Image (cartoon, rainbow, N blue to C red; front, side, top):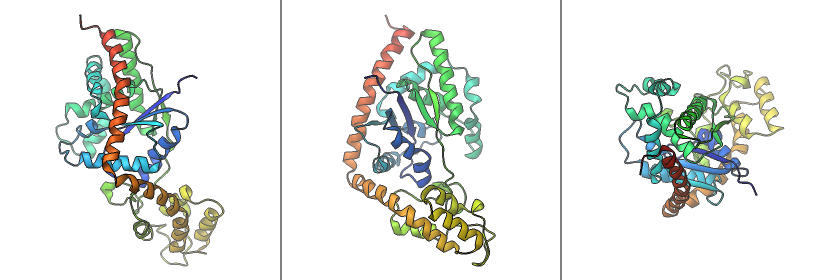
Length: 328
């Protein structure tokens, strides 16, 4: 039987994941397991590109992995690993840095965006080079597909350029990966802005049912509905963005019609949402909790996955070293 095409993606270990992380990436990772050879990793080296305080990274890694497992990533069907536990990534980054023009890295849109958004006065070499580390992450496993949102497509295109430059310089080692665009739904936070931990407007996968209720019921809605009798517009209501994700017909139409006609109030609308939102999140939370109670088991899953990833990485680096041809 032909080997399945490989998919690779990673997340920075920033702790427990929220609903936006799940709907924007993790749910898709789970689905891809059915048809692809999946490699998913904790991108801990990437943390160092814009911060030096790392004491929380080990605990954050375990929390994130608990969310992965609770959401349905299966260590028997996917290779789950920690980037820094496969040091071959660093060697490949070094070799790529020898053939990659600085201009290629400077033109990646997110480089300037991160400097501006985080007000970084003196950006590090690592921050400039983090797209190249991403390229090493991807090409190490000769991934055919990289699931990304549209904002990350330039990173995949850079990876393709790096593969071409290396292959033209030293010989054909790397296939060029393609972006597998993820249809990321609009996931608003409780204040209507994009869901983010930094905004304090997130719903975490570990949140209890009561906590989710407490976060959803005061959510902002259509500002035109100042009174219960005022009609609203679902198209501008953050709550309705969540309805589109969780609420099936006919309740979806009931909520929309009730809003437009003032037939239901905003709290009624949110109760309809919670009826459909709480059960799937509850199943994830219960599975997640079972894993979170056994952190040593999570570490072993990541250790075993890192060993499996390193087998592939060593094979790739043997080909790379032969192509670069430095050693006698």
